[in-house]
Length: 73
Ligand SMILES: [Zn+2]
Image 1 (cartoon, protein in one colour):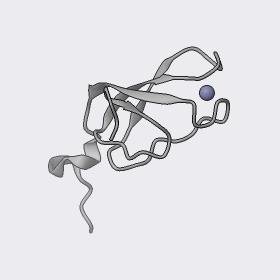
Image 2 (image 1 turned 90 degrees about the vertical axis):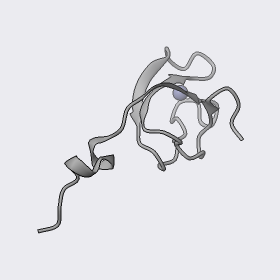
Image 3 (image 1 turned 135 degrees about the vertical axis):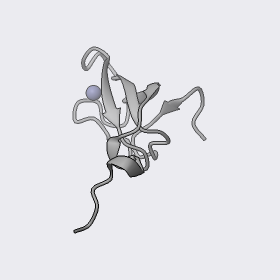
């Protein structure tokens, strides 16, 4: 179980939204990305599994809302 809302590569994204990324070994400065619920957090090509993701702000992707879902023809 993840502690303190800190997630590792391979773990399932619990909530869609903006996550802050913290890289290992000063690979690069921290930054933010959008993650989609139920996808897996990816490893970094620069610091592998040393990268960490922390939820910054929940925000649903439009495809997760019925009123915006694309309907089959
Ligand atoms: Zn990295």
